[in-house]
Length: 530
Image 1 (cartoon, rainbow, N blue to C red):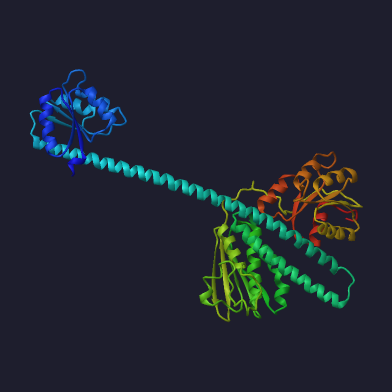
Image 2 (spheres, rainbow, N blue to C red):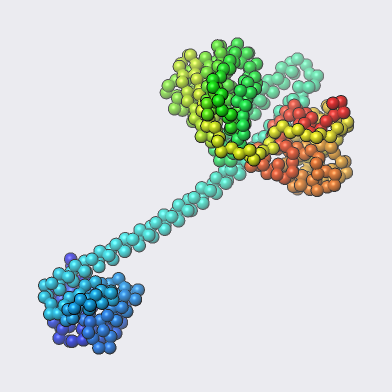
């Protein structure tokens, strides 16, 4: 240890003691400040703290105990070690010295070699403490800086997620709205008397529109899951009926390729509780893939509910190369060369399935053989936390006390003229009396003036949105129970919940089809012919 870097304050009312001890310490290389009064030593120490105090106990004006107490109560000197030097050798005085804050006690007459060893030891400890405190302070500063960096980064990420979420919500609306117009107008054209060649081109346009709609729906679905906005809703599910109904939707497509869909089941020992909508989406995508990649043979569906749901779909298709098995659940991965690919798709179906299963704490596995087919197996845990009080009125079948109306008057509230034209065309074909409004404010005026029996309400509109307009309409005398159906491109679960909470009866997502319109009307209105 370098003594020259260490400074000691000695306090003793006897000058001879100061001179002797001071001389020894200086010869050892220490810097020494000597004082005969405690008050002077205290003032000097506060202004320029030393590395160690050597303090006599018995002194006039201020004894060693009082001086030590004052040093320990001052923030500049509280951590500096104090060694008491005294001729008092009884245990009580030593205890009192330690209680006052002393770190050591040397009795007079003392051996200088012993004093020097103790001084060096305590100065070394003092320097280590100072270094440790400095390191702790630096560490604390760095932790605070890093914490602030993480908080700033977290805030930036939250802002980025919000921007992304808002963008997805907007792009969802912006894509669905024109798709509704395109699909709607094509369906209107299909009802017209056109030539054979025109019909051929129209059918091709319809197929392309449906393909585009399917791609957009998948991309939006994956974006919704990726942004964390998709929520699950669990209820008891009739798995057998669900699989039967879902497979029926694909039988004609499979039959076009000579493929038969065969269903079998195992144990059904438990009632399965889960999100019916998401399970249907998973089965639809697996069936669609099985048909797409098979040219012949059968597609077999096997399921069982033994506590949890296990479902397998096997095909006799092209199979998957082992090198590709790690990629098939990654988004936008293609199994084929993009320049020579035979099968349509953007490579997002299986990632959606994987993401939906992750939300449900489920899993998926695959067994495959090139040229012989693949077997995809999913397992979904039974949602034992389900409570009967969990309700949702999104697309549920209601037993309604429906009014009987002969000449139905329908108000269409929609800011997009193409969508208004499409819906009006559908409704006019059926003989309904139809009138229009281009925003919520205009809808209020039309409701009061025309007294409609039924309202189709767009949600995102200028001047006044559909939710606000609905709340106002519900307050008009005689219109508290009028059926108001949302036609919207805002399809996230929280958006739909917000829409329903505002007073609308049901939600139809864009793009919708003619059968959806007539189905929802018949659900809420009973005609005189019934």
